[in-house]
Image (cartoon, rainbow, N blue to C red; front, side, top):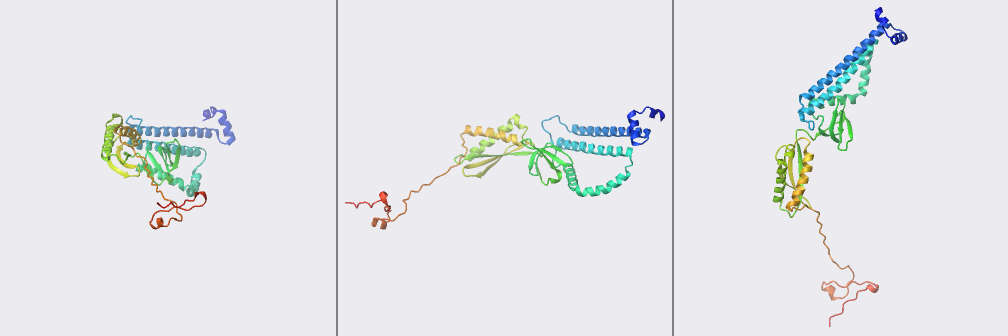
Length: 328
């Protein structure tokens, strides 16, 4: 022990003198703290390694898209990392305090303090419980496109407290889990491209619908787009009759999240095809009815009024209209 004290650095002896504690005891406490945080760091690394193994177990090698299993495993791994960091940090903090002081009275007081704080932290508890059920029930995962609390976007990150969404314009929305009442998942299992094409009333609707179905079939046969579709196209028929023309509807079932790209490509193709086939798009028609009437006024001419014929209107000044001369 004397040899250990003799090799203690000077700053530790100065610190022991300042705190009025035994140098050997302080040295042992510092060594224990170092070992505690080293073990906590190793624990965090183990948790991170387990999370990576979970992700690698379902990785299909395609980094461009994530299937449902990959999304769920990625979500669980992210939550595992965040929970592991919190747990090991709190554990290291408590063990560090216990190396210098007796924390049992603190833990007893913390129970009473925790009860008081719990009343003010009800929203936090609500967020954590909601986040737990989001993960267990698999309502959505990282990479999904969802609508929640008036916002929509791609789920970039999930924790037990909040969900991070990035919308189409790049804005990031951080929504507490407890505030999410209704979730609309736009990319779960499969998606659908709803294509409404309007044509003029003078168009042969059967021919126009056949053109749409044929163009949808060519899109499905294209190797570039075939992998994005999930089944043959479905021709619904005449969807509505509006003022300008008739609306035809075709449905294209796609892979999750691919319906937006399929809709844009199909619109481009169908516009070119309709122009080639000479099928006109509708435009607003407006019919004007003009009714010519003489302005009302006292009639002169006697028999003309009796006969039901419009008589001249009497005005004043130079614009006065005189009755016509009787025939000779």
